[in-house]
Amino acid sequence: MDNKKTVAYLTRHTVSNYGSVLQAYATQTALEKLGCNAVCINYYRTDEKTENIVDTRLKSVSAKWNKNALTRLFFKATQKPVYKFADKRFEEYRKIVKVTDKEYNSEAELKSDIPKADIYMTGSDQVWNTVVCGEIDPVYFLSFLPKKVKKIAYAASFGGASVEEKNKTRIKSWLKEYNKITIRENSGIKIASELGIHAEQVLDPTFLLDKNEWEKLIPNRKCDEKYVLVYQLHPNKQFDAYAKEFAKRKGLKLYRVSHCFHHIVRSGKFICCPPVGEFLWYIKNAEYFLTDSFHGTAFSIGLNTQFVDVLPKSYSERISSILELIGYENRILKSYDDFKIAEEKIDFNKVNEIISTERKKSFDLLKDMIGD
Image (cartoon, rainbow, N blue to C red):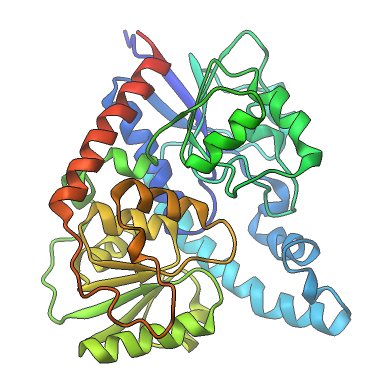
């Protein structure tokens, strides 16, 4: 008879990018290391399904393309193939995450058929940020659960440095229902405090697995040439030009890895949507890694690859927070004329000690939340 506790957790696992899949996998692995049965609640909002997400984006985050019939037609014609291609690839990649047999598409569906578990957990990533439609989703605050069940949060994130005034009352009421809350960024701790909610800071789940554990996913193959790797999520022509010049000055090839095939127009040898193990392989074997991604930064730290961060215009607090922790805020690019930023090597012996100490603290907090 299985006496293990079952933890059902909610996170942004269906977004077709590497951070989403790998942070969900790391959460699952960490819970299993603590002796739990871990299952990700397979929640997939209807408006975020592949066939609907372009229309959803058009009405919210890409509203500038919603001006007239011509701009809408152009946006849909260029974006729908991109999402369809990525989702098809990541549907396969997501198989490393154990999910509930049933797929849920709304709060009502979850309320009518709650997955059976001993503990319910909000997981990591930007779960408490606005979703693609531009609104807060109550489901990620476990709103579908009755009050009597145990609710916890591990490394949850608000995404930015603040929440909209109109959402504060609702968010506070939802958070008060949790038994214990831990948050990923120091900015998130501040938000919770301002709402009158006690929370403790922990590492992103990707840091709960050490280098050896991540290397189990990485293919064992030789690296034949030295290169600079770019993993760029946000449109930024200056970043693109900087990467090209950075590699040229280092006398190295420039590689670019992306889950979006239209990024082929950007500089560098293009690696389109490789499996998750290969994605990590490219980071591990790079001489230098240039990124605007939080999870890109996390894996370069975890795999001990020299990196430079180009902060995105929004939601950059998560990158700043982890760099502050390891004492390397100086790896944030301040000027696109700065090509000496990576000349002083990161001391990964020091960084690994810091992460190891924080990993133990985070595991202890997660274990305490789960209980005996």
